[in-house]
Image (cartoon, rainbow, N blue to C red):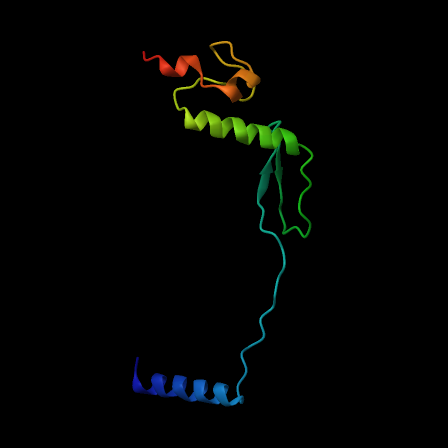
Length: 109
């Protein structure tokens, strides 16, 4: 930084502290920046412009169930549970899968 710019900066800061200079007013934009939403049935909703209202989730329970199943599946990486059909290769249903680990995951190839 040169002496000239340093002097200008110090002078402006001093004048701002005394109240002679004000910060430039900034425009507050209140909008969500959501590009798209992926629903549980596989449809994608894209948003071209900023939206001012939260999108309504009509599939809230299905979304929560899908996230729960995916997290449980990630905890057991060798598991072959299919979250779309909600069944496993070993024959387990959702109820069995949520209470215990998958049998196929413990076997090695």
